[in-house]
Image (tube, rainbow, N blue to C red; front, side, top):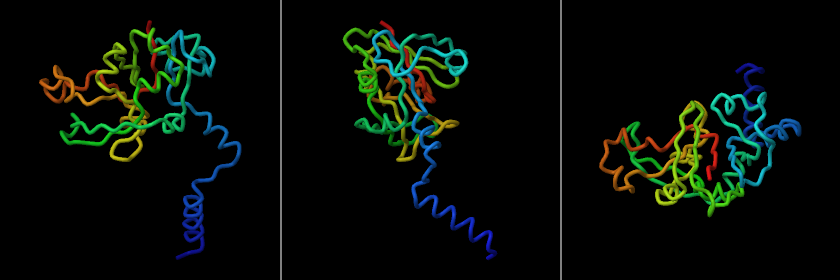
Length: 195
């Protein structure tokens, strides 16, 4: 083994063992990266209104808000996770999905759950579903961060998947598997709360 290969391997091992320690500047940037924005009249804002320069994807998807609450992945991981074990349309197999309840995320954003009528969940590809808050509760919808103990990734089903087990919903249970997940947008990144 040559010296360069050894040093590169040792350096990578040290990086992994140290938990990928970052410089203070890199840690500050990573600590502020948000993956979910919840907008609505009653949210407890922790970010400014839609920025037409920085919020390009939201702008292209027609979002417009004055008040929003943004979450980083660590914020969501600190919430009590729920687990679902649905049969997925992609392979017909049972998988374990884990993440916080959507109603808990809305509550953490300061949403007045008594006054909220509907929520629109938008995915990275522009797909959007609108559900009543009653449907979100009845179906036990979660914002999945993990599938089979692996984080959901952008380019796959992540960063978040707004999902429930359709086998627990009588009128969906009777549908073909490929049609049961129409109200479950993967790649979720934006939620607008509608009165």
